[in-house]
Length: 119
Image 1 (cartoon, rainbow, N blue to C red):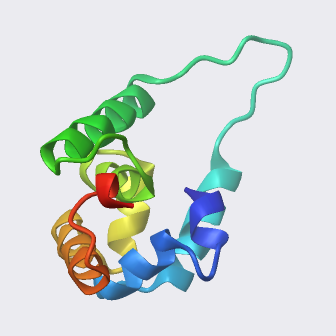
Image 2: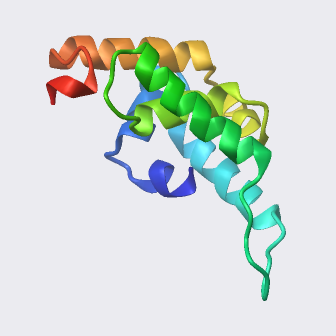
């Protein structure tokens, strides 16, 4: 999430802003949260159940929206729905999953793209 939110002209910031949130605040909170997380050295990293749930939710959301593959839109939406530190950060930044869904619809309507298959 930190990488996506750092891009000032990227989709993630645009969606958060259009959803009524503060992308700069979300970036600050995400970075602070990242620095609090434990690090692992000398061991094989493993994917947590929460991360797997977020990835699966983003893929399911893409299918539901009629898209052939998941994009940053779907990932941000999943991050805003699945109970996690990322969801807390997004909400503290002033945006909910419902706000993000509406922002996606607005951006797609404004651009004339109804799904990522049209790109």
